[in-house]
Length: 319
Image (cartoon, one colour):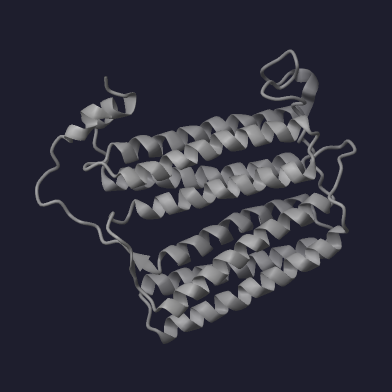
C-alpha cells in the first residue's frame, strides 16, 4: 500500500525552481517565527494564553477577555501552522523529485521534527511561567530549525555527489571558526535577554541570576571576535582567488554584521527600546543565514543533468 507522499510523487514532479522555492519558504517562515516570537515577548504577551495547548483552561482559542496580549500570543501560535505548511510543502517537493533524493528528503523531515519539538518546548515555557531558561531553549531551537532550513535550501541547488572543496583547507577551518563563534554569539544573546528588561509578561517573571549589562559586554566581545574573523575571511578569499560567489557571501556577512553592530550599540545606549530589540533579533537571523551560506559556499556538489526524461521510479510503489 502506498503512502500519501508516494502517491503524490508518482503523479507530480516539481521543477528545480519549485523545489528551491519550497525550501526557501521554510527559511522565510523560520525567520518570521523567530521575529514574531520576539514580538510576543517584547509586547509583554508571553502569557497572553495562560496555558497550552489550549489558550485557556476552557477555550482552545483566544477569548475577548484576554485582550491584546491574548491575540498576540495566539497569533504567534497560529503562525506555527503556516510554518508547518511551508515545511510540509518542502517535504512533498523533495519526495517528488525524480530521481528521488533521499538525503534531501531527510533534511526536510528533520525540519518537521524540530517544529514539533519546539512547539512542545513553547508549551513547557508557558507552563513554567516564562522561565528564562526555557525561553532561551525555545529561541535556540528556532535557530536550529533555521539552520536545517538553510542547509536544505542550499542542497536543492546541488547534486548528491560527495562534496568537493573550492578553497584551501585553512580557509575552511577559518569558516568553521566563524560558524562556532557566531553560534556562541547567538547563545550569549539569550543570556542578555534572560537577565534583561523584556521578560515577556507584565507580571513578575524570574530572570537569569546576573546583571544584564555584564552579559551584554560579554556578548559584545563575542560580536567583535566574529567581526575580526569575518574581515580576515574576506581578505583571505581575495588572496586565494576564491570563486566570485564565495567572496560575495563574505561581503554579505560583513554588511549584516555592520548593521547588526550598529543596532546593538544603539539599543544598549538608548535603554533597549522594543523596536530596536526586534530589529536586532531579525539581524541575528540574517547574520546566521549569512554565516551558513558562506560556510556552505566553500564546497560544491555538481548537479548531474539527466540525459533523457526521468521515468517512473519503481521504488515509489514500495514507499
